[in-house]
Length: 111
Length: 139
Image (cartoon, rainbow over all chains, first blue to last red; front, top):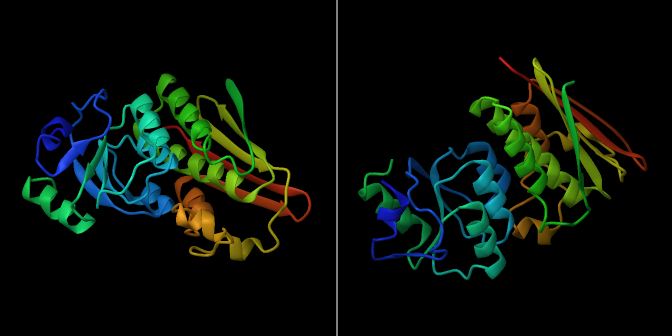
């Protein structure tokens, strides 16, 4: 599934609309410890994290992630959104919690 | 070495932290290095860069590329690590609460570097600084 298709789903809102969303979501990953995520997340994943500061964009860029999903409507810093746009990383916000995001993605066929 | 470049990393500069790793990755892509090796170097480089920002008094990352291997050197001007064995233990961290809230300080930085590099060596002297040398073989 492409990021563009995911953000058409009702619970998800793309925060940086100018970014390219043609990227395929190959898998998902959940985690807030950045070193753990760096070590274990796959390239091309949708990363679910409650971390919203600038450094998440460095992690997502280095691992060539498909997108970042911020659960529970957590506020995302303006600087983070700007950096994500600069680096071409879609940031998606949702009211769902991390577990609900995972089940939602799983039901869409993302393994 | 055919190519060499330095990146300075300042103490506590979390806003810029990650920039050097991004530039290294971009450089390696342009040089046509394979994706798997780039991933290893990106992880090790990022961990090194964050360690410089979080723990050091400032330092630099040196990238050297030849046809056989890529060397990554992470060195700082202090404060040095008193117990290297403890610092290399997965899960051990001296990061502050503020830094931990940002998702750092998992105690995985040095172990992640060692796991991803084909060669890893660390030397440290309290009051002087720390130097990490890593190599990644090119197949």
